[in-house]
Length: 86
Image 1: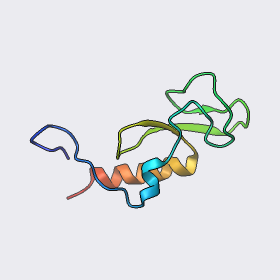
Image 2 (image 1 turned 90 degrees about the horizontal axis):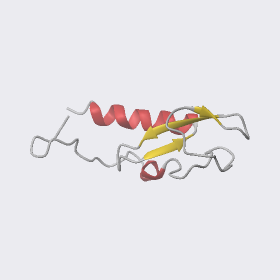
Image 3 (image 1 turned 45 degrees about the horizontal axis):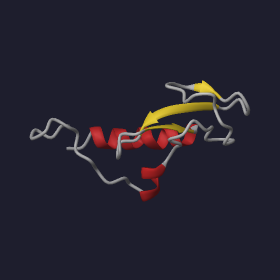
């Protein structure tokens, strides 16, 4: 849904306040906090802990963050909620 006045998707409040701060903005593994050589732009395995690091855009501030699998699911649910509002 887009706001006809400015063509952008309206901001919504997260279901839980902590969701607005999910993920790492810096190039740090969300599982083991190991520094990464550079911030990935898509899913990749952490060279230290071998867990998959996911890259998502938070719906509330539109920032690209590095997240765990569980955090990825939370962000995906929030995007679904935002995009399917009546």
